[in-house]
Length: 111
Image (cartoon, rainbow, N blue to C red; front, side):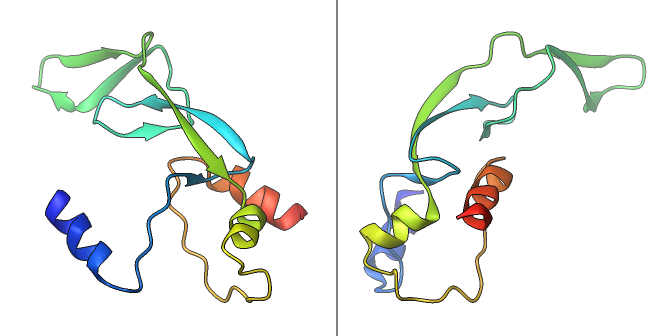
């Protein structure tokens, strides 16, 4: 929603950057879900959506052809270095990076 984004940008404590958080510095490929979401997870070729059952039949979704998106991502150390936050201590870190949480955290804990 453009109105929400504009109101968040007007607040001094929200900052938007043209990349995502990831387990690498580079590009990752995201795959589209049926419910207009994206993730790094590849879905099975065929899947029954139980919420689309009418009692006698269920809709079968063919994920054989998922639309893909390339997204630039950066690791936490890279982001902290670019933002000149290397001397800061992270107390709380909240993540919702569309299936990339494990790769992101693995890289953070290994560095």
